[in-house]
Image (cartoon, rainbow, N blue to C red; front, side):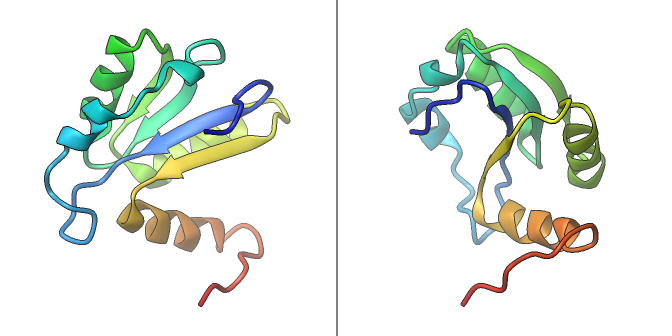
Length: 110
């Protein structure tokens, strides 16, 4: 995993068909590396499941909102110029790219 030091972190978890419906994998991931900096924003259909999982690894979460658009706007505006990282599931990534494309140039991927 990336060293989170100095970065604002957002996590977006969906459980749509393309992501896989079984969220048990969240419990197989070690999130302790995020403990020191915490997570600024958790969003997506399974935002509260992710926030609970982070709580078990003693990772502080500043804000939880299932509305991805609102959550992204909050994340982008509230981090005082810190570089940002977003960890997300597949369908969340597609939605995030769509929203980010409204405010900046998003590189086409193939």
